[in-house]
View 1 (cartoon, rainbow, N blue to C red):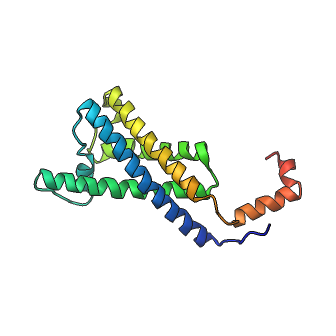
View 2 (view 1 turned 180 degrees about the horizontal axis):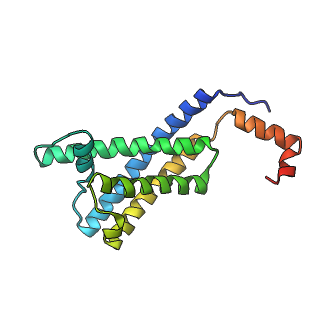
Length: 180
């Protein structure tokens, strides 16, 4: 079966688009996860997005309603945009569990490093282990959802130059000799 070849920009654009859709779905999933957890633990909504926005964007909400609005806007924009990372991982031809683990590591690792820099949270070593576990769980919900959605969107991918080269090498028996 002859597949249409794509060029690099076409692949990149498709990966970014699918990543954004996966990020949007994952943000919805983490939002529901957090809402359920907050109801069970009686935890108040996080002010982390507002703290970061205040540092990065010089946004200064004047009252609680504005804080909640800014927090939600940042939460959805940030979560959706993190889906682009999943798209980049997809370009590397990772799928399924390996891709989800890479995405989870990148997303949660990024937050553990960046939030203390913006003084939005203490370093992970100074946080309550239970809070860290809950945060890890929510980020796992995000990464799993993003992975499932991205992989579902990526099923009809056309043949890329990388795929074509791999197929040609395999047909010539070179891959077997290289023990791939």
